Length: 386
Image 1 (cartoon, one colour):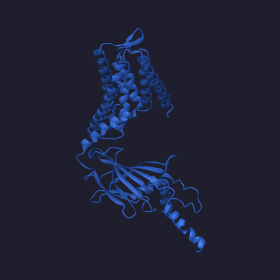
Image 2 (cartoon, rainbow, N blue to C red):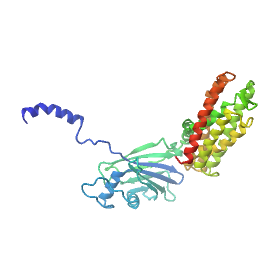
Image 3 (cartoon, rainbow, N blue to C red):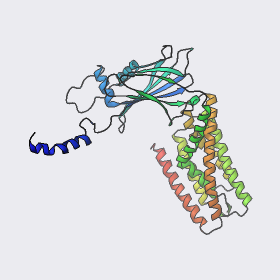
């Protein structure tokens, strides 16, 4: 190397240290295996990067090699993916007895995702422990280097694990492609506490439920006179108004929540979501002008039945046993009540402070109009399926 080249050598070495040539522009995603433990069966959700899955299918001869110079990985047929997965996922009891596996669904990568999703149902052999098995996993990690699969338990009621808070078990790689999966015992109380937290979180994230409760409370310190709202000076009546409205709403959604969770009522769909939006609109309109004075508790109870059907969606997705469903429903409902009481504790002192003041109609109408506009937007978007 000449003197000029030697002068640039330190700079080139620094660039090499900062930007190593072997570093990819973006880190490649790992595969994932999320296990949901139900009574008598497991559900395994495989998350497979589309490019690595295509490479594995090409390397094993399951799909044609596109040859040099291709610009995009081929999209494999679902049958090829299904056969490849079933040939490379092995679940067995600790004594080696194979579990029965069945692919429930395959979802191709959506426009904004990079992964295939494969759901597998697994059943333990008769007479074997349904909560402990050895997973042998060769999908992609045997055929493509580098790759790894993160294994986690995503749901285990007895172990206190609920969706959204997985228990990571480990990482499978080319040289270590097996892991023992076992549910923990005696943690049902943890699951109950998790359901309470989930109920609180559900209300905190549910703007439509919060809007309905707030509009329900807006008129609790008021009385209807000649088609208008005036201040109710009897504090006992204000307390009774608040108590009966909140209690009726609670009773309504508790009944429908339990009935829907147990399958006695159909799962909430688009129609129920639209009705929830309309319940907010009606309650907001009532706060602007008395529509059903002195019948607020009855209306709250009726609308509570509708809201409860939507609440139950979370529990139905867990696919618990009857006993577990009842416990989960009670915990989830308790969390909802804690959140609702928190909203009441925040809103009612402000409404009582405004009662009889000149600013009260402006605050009430402003809040009601915002809720009404939001409710109409929710109703339209839900009817359009957005």
